[in-house]
Image (cartoon, rainbow, N blue to C red; front, side, top):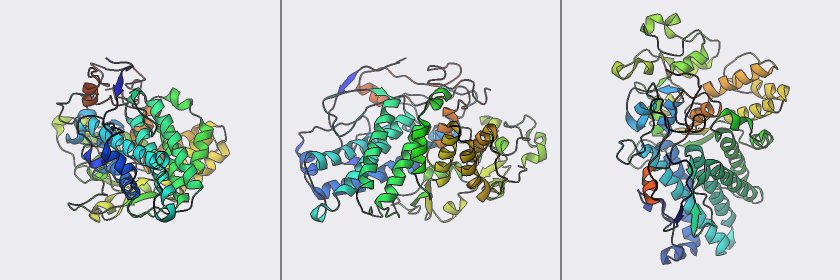
Length: 502
């Protein structure tokens, strides 16, 4: 199996038009292509390219049928399903099996699509910055839109490089200066470059006054100040969710995490949904199928977190062997507002370990509005919990407890204040993240379990480079995950000593 790729590739063709990106390879642009040069000299063209960047990222993160979101959801053992779509059945098998990184695999889009589209976003954002920085193009009347476009391009560079680093073991470290040959590098480098790009975006946002058009992030005409807060929040996400194990998590610069969290969003980040019609551009199939009645359920591991008298696995004797029929007994008000007791289960031949007594109902208002409702992308509570964890790890226990006690634990849950004690605060943070953040940003449940060495044994810790790209650079297919057989270095590529081993 490939451990370290030291192969160089020649950059061929960058896709300026995102919709024209190849389905099979990472396309890098010929810098002497006449069409490209014409676009990079056209202010309206650069503005148009920028306007669609976030939507392309959003579609892969929330909407596309090939999104890795559902597979990450079940691998985290937050949710459970009995259907096979989106590789959810394969990635939730117990014992765990490896990810099939072969082009013929029926759900290979789970690996391939996100990789391709993130690089389409990235190379297009690079082109926008080249047009502004390299060609001196000014956009809008008297250049009034130049910094808005430039800041958004840096922002989208960061999101695409960053999420490639979150999902894959290796990456191409691309920015606007890339030319000639590039070397495949590790995920840490991709995340580090992403953070640098988001920091550049913050400099632009903090030093210029503007509002982005509402259709760039549907329904949000964010000010430069709000965009800065969002960039800080995504940096905190990338830093905290990037580690593949607890040792990498411990080694984070928690002072830097704290700084970004304290400068992050103070209100939920939503995208306005545009319905379930044929022209939809801003809806979330990911949320719908993972929480839809009669499809997704809440894994019994989470039921156990909310009520530890209930076992974290479906018992052999079924419902009769569960305390109080598997009903969560808790003083947390969110158990009633966010969860629905539901004992309907199916497909026993696919494993009773997929069965549960609850479904997640907090998003029902979104479904019931036919998707003409806000799509939650990042809750302010997520950023508050980053702050609380950073304070805890820095030994500032009283401040960490204050963040928790002025947040969702008390406001939504009506739970008593957490004590100013290290173990109590750590447990409260884990509990709040479990109950408060599901089905917001793609993969955060999985990333959180991964960084704390909690993923079920045999779960892959990152995706391999997709097979189509390996074919292009003439490297053999490889993959991660599984128990027998198992592929990858234990604790670095595949989970061991997690919360459960069948």
